[in-house]
Image (tube, rainbow, N blue to C red; front, side, top):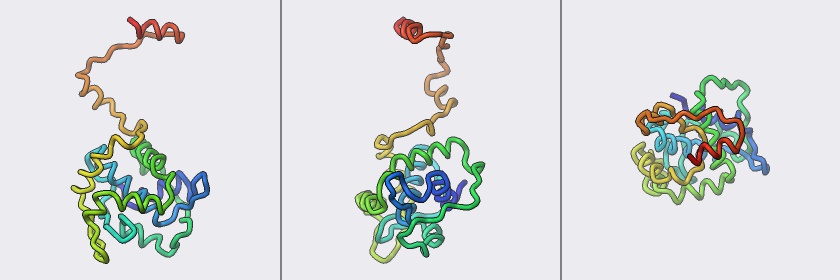
Length: 188
């Protein structure tokens, strides 16, 4: 299992510390990206992406060890990790994290903060000044209702699961050379 810092390092190493439009990846923004990664990982895969707890703080969900790592940077762009090991991230996990970034990396830190302030995990858990933990059960139940709102990529591809779902009834596709051949075959 990854740590919250592994997830954060992936976002920073693979996507840099600024977005295409020049928005900074600050501690606040990184916290929200890691939160969404955990929530959607629970929904799509039925298990946590990392073990560290997420807490409901004034500015939204926060993973304390991640916050402590980057708190001295305040609202500035976070450093890109100098040592990054791709082998920590299986292809499915890397694809999943890229999907999370493509869905949420486009938003500013403040927009992400506002989004989390309208979502059940933070609304139910937040108690001013208490930094209450957001339960895995609450994250899972909420993000299960959000699965259809995320644009997915190939991260959820599983040949075994596909075979199960269609009871191993695959139809072989013939070797077709042209688009017209494919169209005719599909019309049969």
